[in-house]
Amino acid sequence: MISSSKRDELIVSKIRNGTVIDHIPAGRALAVLRILGIRGSEGYRVALVMNVESKKIGRKDIVKIEDRVIDEKEASLITLIAPSATINIIRDYVVTEKRHLEVPKQIRGLIKCPNPQCITNNDVEAESKFTTVSIKPLKLKCDYCEIYITEDDVIRQIL
Image (cartoon, rainbow, N blue to C red):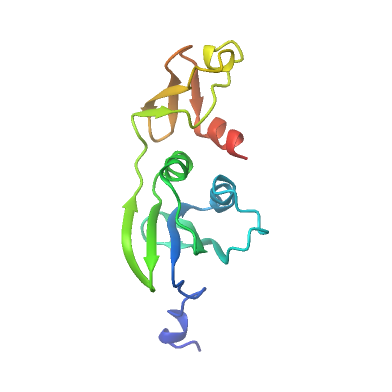
């Protein structure tokens, strides 16, 4: 029989400094690593936990990255594929900043419009711009050509 203290042990150890991205929907942790450009050869110590129980969302993934703080652009992209995620910045084993992600109403320059005729794909100075139509399920509308894209379209661009 396993004692309750054994069951409550951490799957991975705490990190001294860095970022913990928690409450990632199950199966999306690899996409988060892709957004962060982490392929394993960068030298970061990374812990990846997938499909663990979560009281908040049922099943979740967790990513811990030592000695790396993510920037606003990376956080915005993570929001599009993991709107329930939280980003915790860790300093000396203590959470010093906790960010709850929210899908913004306007998304500029982060993702491409899939329409090859869209001006953003034909003018180097045109920046893509999408308006959020719905969050669950994610649906975005290009402000130029009015094409709609979904969460699957966003994930395909990232992966």
